Image (cartoon, rainbow, N blue to C red; front, side, top):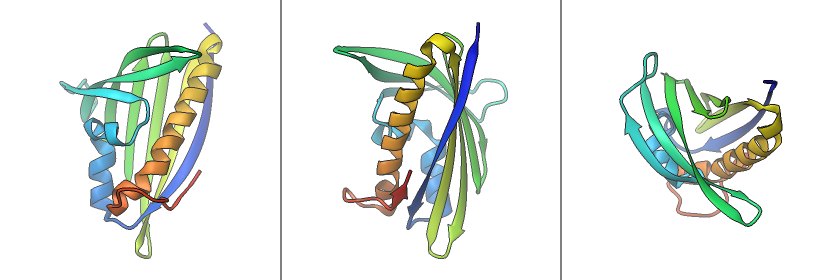
Length: 157
C-alpha cells in the first residue's frame, strides 16, 4: 500500500495565558467547541506511551452524503511550550498535530503543524477534510482563548 504524507501549518495569536491555551489544546474532550467536524468525544483509558486517549467521532461529507467516522486520538506530549497529538483511523490514516506556544509581548503565539498520512487513493479527500477542519478550528481558537463569543480572531493561516 502506497502511503502519501503532507503537512500544512497555521498560526494563531491570542491574549491569554500559556497555561489556559495548554489546558484547552491538550484536552481533546474540549475540542467539540473548536473543531467543525467533531460531534462526539469520549475519554478512554490512556494507551501505552500516551498522556490521554480518546475516541472521537467526526461527521464527514461526501457530496450529498453525511457519515460518522470514529477514530482514536492520543495526547503524546503536554508541556508548557509544546503539545503533540496523534489521531489514527482505518485504513492506515494518521494525523499528527505538533503545537508550539510562545509569548510575544502580551500575546501568545500558537504555531501548529499538521501532518497527514493516508493511503494514496484516500489521500486527497482526507487531506482536504483535515485542512478545512483545522483551519476552521484556527479561525475559532483565538476568539475562544481571548474569551470572546464571536468576532474576528487574530489568526493567520
